[in-house]
Image 1 (cartoon, rainbow, N blue to C red):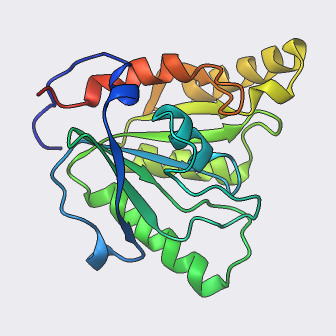
Image 2: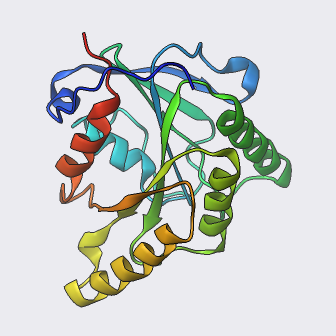
Image 3: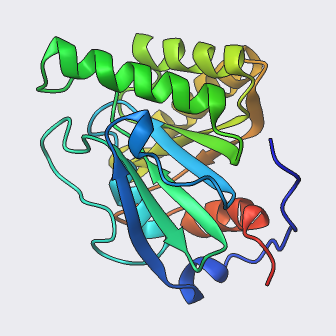
Length: 211
């Protein structure tokens, strides 16, 4: 990693700073220059990565959303006020793409996590309705191997009853304990209902460079 960013810890930065699309990278050669701290968002196809990015920056369509698995076909980089980069990554697991395309995505994602010096955290999104599935566990093991600290973020919690959510939270807390690179705090969110977004903004704002 490069030197630590100056920590700010102000969630309003996500509301007040402009957020613009910078580049889409379908291969390593097209990755933008690594100059700002980066937060990467990853998860199964259709877990809600783009919706969460939009909710974090409080914009409706900064990141493309779709009901079709595999809509994000590259690493999409979004610049937050020239002080932080948000990276919306292709989903893993089920997607309507060829085996060759899936292999290319897997290699790109693995190499990104292995070699991106400005990467500060990965956010692993888990659909609260389904819990962690085999592909999720495999990917968390990859982050353990590459020593990338990651948050587990539950999405779509508004679709669950309180008792169902409590069960998922308990299971995911056990999952956190089983991964050496997992951050100890679990985040539960709903992009649609704006639940837990401010808490996540507070956590991620510490990586925004000070002016």
